[in-house]
Length: 435
Image: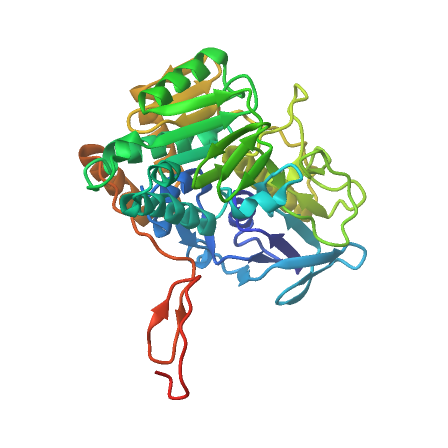
């Protein structure tokens, strides 16, 4: 019985597991720190109160329940011993014949990881709900503030990074302030909130063609988003950001400026690129350990033109499908072929009825691109129930400009003997009787 161990339940790991489902003489174990698969392309919708977390996440067990040879475990991989073919995790040691590493990516702070506390990135559900909390709390604090400067600071939102994630966040935040919250407050005018998108390069969406990027910029400006290009952030703290000698006060800063591969397991001595991605062979394996494969955002591989493959869902899905075919072929003694990525184009949405799309010669913007964006994202959502919920929620938001997930949920609450709860940062004292 061949033992196949998969670390990571993202697009690459999950797709590989499904492709290996019901494979004879093979036992597949998938380990992930979460018990669900997350549809990351819609995380920004959770962060901007457009969708609830459960609408873009599905339990891994429910997805893979029909495959009798697949076991799902919740835990975190710590180290690997390639010579012994053993992975050590928080839930025990697991031996393998074939290992797939697909642990995803994190945001890159370019040596300033301490900025994360004041400028969270957007890669997990926890980060999305924290950003939602900060954004909605900023409006609430501004409503209660009497100092004009502090009110202005609370109503200033900065997004660092002008790639697709930053553009989608900026568009959704502009729409949230200009439409969704416009009538909800008495002491402030949410439509006057400043949404600032900062990009260190000469223009936003550098991976798109310049004409399409210009159309995206105009759509953002229509929503009131300020676009600052050729600006490099040099400091982030709880009062705002600095760009050299220039200080920009803001209560909410969101980081979307670059990614790096997730931390490699201890014991794995391999070459990596500047983003920490493992330099793999054309079949996604390690040169010195052909039984170990790396896929998704952790894999460093170039296309036929020598350009590094982007860290997007279609790449990870295609690599997962490829690995399933390759491993099946290896078990059956069939020779494999190098991985080849079929480019599915690029998409980015900019609020209601606005998006940009590039696929070869096809370049679209506005409502046609947005409509295709909706169809594509609904199609790739896992689970009929999730597709139904998202369609209904988007239809409701589109027609009413309302968003139904506008809940301010604190990160943690402490329960006390009398049953009261106190928010973080507050204290409560008790006498010996607990009163």
